[in-house]
Image (cartoon, rainbow, N blue to C red):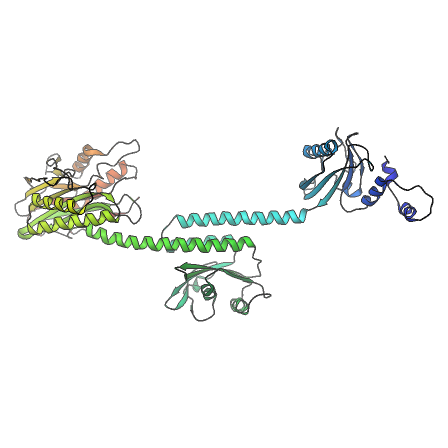
Length: 573
């Protein structure tokens, strides 16, 4: 084996090698190899597995050392700096004793002066004819630019994926189309690192800017005709993501738009409805900006997510309008009734466009009589709402024809048996009040008993209910009678009130209802439903499992003493 001094070949030696007929003995294969590697720009070194030390290094290798005179450990590895880690030592030993070459494609080296570089290191066992047994030649190639570029791309991908996750969270957090678009515009502008963003919507043959971010708000309302060249019309025409940057290799239309708006780059995302662009979200940069595949991918995903989200929002809005129409039919009461105070409230336990089976009504009949009804059809959804509307209408029609509590509920039972499925049923209360005498006849079909609070007395429940509606054909509903004197308070409700549960599973119950009705003795009737609801709502920590309908009535005497009150409807918490 040649020493380091022997293989430090000078130019004169090279000349001797190349001189024919010089008569000098030829250099060994290893010396020739060392000669080639000595002046190379990449690090190279020979490590001996037999002697556990580096037997030869070139200048590029020594330049990587943290010390001008590096120290070596027992395995011949540098004490610190380049290759000082245990993993590198293991790879030298594996290559030396297995005879298998190994390549580390991305060795990360942190120099003591703070610089980080990446190297592709090849551990090559030396053939016996070139070196001694267990010798390993190390060759390194600086791959820092490639690794840095790849990691930058990976970071960009990760950042944009995170941004898309945030945008999707925003989209899923609301069913309000305007709110979705406003929030996504801000988040997407920041994700793309655009200088400004905008949102245009198609209206009456024009594209109108409805929202901007990073752009003067005076631009809101700016419009372009659909048939003229504009940023939104370009994306709407293709129904796909459009982008351009710089002045080279761009179409004439793209160049004209960039010059018109004095921008260096733009990216536009169409918002589609049934294959047609109804909106365009755009992002602009003041200077040229390279569009990476990750940015284009985010834009395409954004187009799909926004289109689906707005379609869901439109469906939700349509269902909500239907719900409001149905609710207006299910909960009705006159604004005022002479001689009475009247309050009523409905609260839906579910957020969104869902209709329950609760209903109530106040019917003004002849001879100053008043029909009062409260009911609950089991279930939820449009089908139940349709059945609820049918039952309520049937009860109202029967009350107008024959104002008898037993007759009204008997007719409702017949309708329920004919129109409902075998597993469907309903509970209901109907009362008939003579507003002159205070005579009150009433009947219950499986419904929670109303509470009567007489002036100066404790609250009590009215008579026990009869069979629920929709179960038996031969059910008979016999009326009970009482008198409501001036000052007496009557509270009617659905079971969502008494069945409210707290976090421990304890029900609000009838006892708490009586206690809270007693506390409402001095309140006007129009305030009683809200007071009772808030007591149950607080008891349940704001989480009600069922809808709640409450109606309260108090006689004030004869004459036009009714108090005007619209139905109070509380949104789901």
